[in-house]
Image 1 (tube, helix red, strand yellow):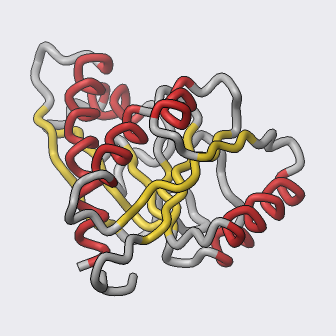
Image 2: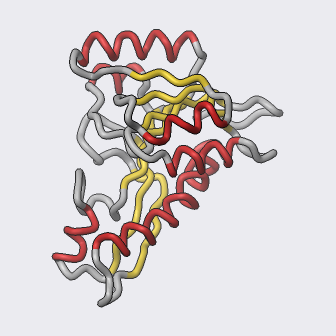
Length: 192
């Protein structure tokens, strides 16, 4: 990533599928004085994503794409990203896999937050897996997106101790709190 120069903020698109708690957190982060990013676009693969309400609340452009025809949709998204001069894509609970071609076109400029200490537990149900395997720690990772699922270079991670009382719901709540701190910290690290 480029060094932060003057007051120029890097236009960012956030891709979501769900409640948007990381999106809301990134929007708040984008409003502080020393932030390197501005959130200019929210993309979702479903109109049921609760996080879309933040587009209206914070007056950010939103676009919903039906991912049935991936090649076609990705072409449309790339055109939109170019038109909006987007420099960074943050995946925040985006439950679709982007194609190799799409990732190559935005190489090194797509990051994701994942609720495990990668390379452990790629994909879904990470907290259940950590508890089932009697891990001492769960956690979260921010990483670059590559064509291999949850396999890109790790930017930052945060460990969360798993207690004897934890179930996947209590663990996921504690990990989510850490995600909200980790994503902005990872973005600052990228741009500094």
